[in-house]
Length: 213
Ligand SMILES: C[S@@+](CC[C@H](N)C(=O)[O-])C[C@H]1O[C@@H](n2cnc3c(N)ncnc32)[C@H](O)[C@@H]1O
Image (cartoon, protein in one colour):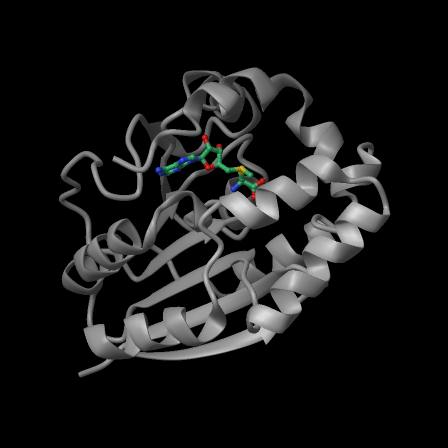
């Protein structure tokens, strides 16, 4: 469920770190300030941490460096292989946002960067419901991901990408499951979270959702 993009990530794994450091002009703005964004998320997290879509473990490394316990979940075998080499301190298991090994540990923070948009609306809701049940009292979901402030902003981003000749990016923005801010906000509120949003670059937002009493 929600793992339709995994083949793509197996192929992308070996060059993924080049992309996030700005080597691909088409995706440079998407990952503008990547390191600082991940650092901000790592700083906000409280141990023990559960991370989804760890990719090549860039966020995992920053979190583990703060002596936090991190368990990671990643569906792509190639990404997991790289993550295990780059961050042996974290346990990274096969799984996805919805189907993942039963963990006996308490969880204070559930974190993820640039991955939640791989789920459609129904899957996002299902995943967030699971996290509400799994989190300790006062626990938080803290994500960074691309989202659209509204429809006008979405169309503007697609038009900008087309004008620059970034046709893959334009297609991604049209076809992937990037949510509208208001829809995501409603989803969190309906499940009982308190949620706030902060824009980090042209595409990426920090989403911080605390489990209510
Ligand atoms: C753009 S990468 C982000 C990697 C890393 N978190 C980062 O910030 O660089 C997206 C990651 O999400 C993973 N992914 C794709 N579908 C997923 C799903 N349904 N559940 C969990 N992770 C998924 C991909 O395999 C990939 O590693």
